[in-house]
Image 1 (cartoon, helix red, strand yellow):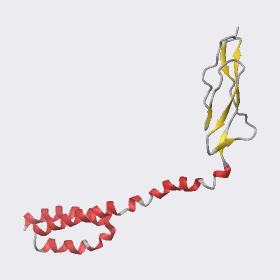
Image 2 (image 1 turned 60 degrees about the vertical axis):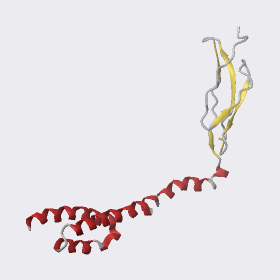
Image 3 (image 1 turned 180 degrees about the vertical axis):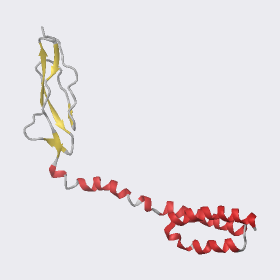
Image 4 (image 1 turned 180 degrees about the horizontal axis):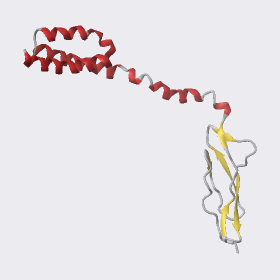
Length: 154
């Protein structure tokens, strides 16, 4: 009764591939662990196409294969996993902080042109600690608003 019946595609196993040569009943196939992985001891890479008489379906036996990271390659792994940590210098890269002094220097010139005297002379005293860009740039963006608000009072 099972003549001409074939199995479907075998179930996928994590970190493994299978090249099926025959989908016919009783054919046996082996899963191959992907590169960088090896078969865990005690697990089998073998699967077989069997016919379930009750359900009248052909199916592959479920392999208990576990592909684990090849321990002999683990020495080479850290550089590739360490690469994401290499992203930490990026926030400190010159571009974001390089833009901030531009913004503050633009606001400096605007402030200097509006009130040429008192409030404008206050700005240079707050500008030198630009090394702490985050804090200073916030202050300098608020200072123009304060000086603009004070200007009409005079």
